[in-house]
Amino acid sequence: MVGMSEDVWLSDDQQRAWVRFISVVERLPGVLDTQLQHDADLTHFDYFTLAMLSEAPNRTLRMTELAAVTNASLPRLSHVVSRLEKRGFIERTPCPGDRRATNAQLTDSGWEKVGATAPGHVGTVRDYVIDPLDEQDVADLHRIMGKILGKLDPENRLRVQR
Amino acid sequence: MVGMSEDVWLSDDQQRAWVRFISVVERLPGVLDTQLQHDADLTHFDYFTLAMLSEAPNRTLRMTELAAVTNASLPRLSHVVSRLEKRGFIERTPCPGDRRATNAQLTDSGWEKVGATAPGHVGTVRDYVIDPLDEQDVADLHRIMGKILGKLDPENRLRVQR
DNA sequence: TCTACTTAGTTGTAGCGTCAACTATTCCGA
DNA sequence: TCGGAATAGTTGACGCTACAACTAAGTAGA
Image (cartoon, rainbow over all chains, first blue to last red):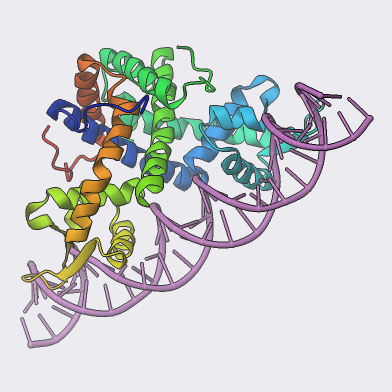
C-alpha cells in the first residue's frame, strides 16, 4: 500500500491539532458564504470564480483552467458559470483554435460586481482569519498550507508559487 | 462598525497565505468525503458525528451538544441523525428531565461501524495532512487554528481546551 | 395562573455539488 | 486516412445543507 501510513492512530499532539483544524475547515465556509450571500447574493465559490477571472489576462480563462484555480470539478464549474452567465457577470465564448474548449470571460457588470463585493468580503477574511494572527503566524500558515497543498494538488494545477 | 477592520486589502504575505489556506479549505472536505463514501458509505460529517458519540459518556449526547461539537446547525444535525437512525447506527430517545430535548445514542452497530471505519479515515488524514508536517508544523497548526477558532466559535461551544 | 418569551428540536423547500452519462472535438498510431 | 482513445465541456438526477416555518415544552413576570 504505497502512500498509506504505517501507524494507525495519531499522537495526542497530532490529534489536538487535527480536531482544531477540521473544526475551522467545517466552519469557515459557512461564515464566508453567509456574509457574501447576505451582502451580494453570491456564494463564496461564485465570488472566487469572478475574482479569479478578474485577475486573468483579458479577464478570460478556459473552463479547465478556471476549474483548476478555483479548486473545483469541471461539472461544478459548468453549473456555476451557467448561473453567473444568466445574471450577466460572465460570458461564454467558443475558444478559437480548439473547438472543444470554452472561454469564460468576465463582463463589465461582473467586474463591477467583484469591485463592489471585495471590501466586505476582505473585511470578513480579516476579522475571522488574518487579524487574529501575527506576522509569524501568517508565515507559518503559508508554510504549512503549502505542505498540505503539495499533497492535495500534487500536479500544482493551482499555479501558486512553491 | 465595531469589529470591522479598517484596512481594506491584504498585504502580499497575507494574500499568499490566505490563497493557500482557502484552497486547502476547499479541497480537503472532498478528499475526506470521497474516501469515506467509497469505503464506508458515509460522509465525513456522518463519520464525525458517530465518532463524537463514541467518545461521549454512555455514547450519548443531547442533540444541541452534538451539534456544537460537530460544528453543525441543529437542522443539519437533525437530518443527518434521521438518516443514521434509519441505518441503525444511532438511536433517539427522549431526554428524561427535559421533555423538549432528545438524546442521540450510538448503537452497538454504530460503535462497530466507527471502529471498522476509523483506520482508513485516519490513514487519509495522515497521508494528506499529518505526515507532510513535522513536529514544529503540528504545534504551529494547533496554535494558529486555536486563534482562528477563537473568532469562529467565541463561546467555545466546542470544548477544545484553549 | 395567565401570558409572553425563550429554548429544543423537526420538517419542508429550494439551491448547490457529485457522479454518471453524454456530445463534440482532437490526437495518435497503423 | 481511418478508427480508437483521450480531452473539453454540458446535462440530468440524486443527495446533502441552509433557511424559514413550525410544534412542543420550559421559564419568568404580573
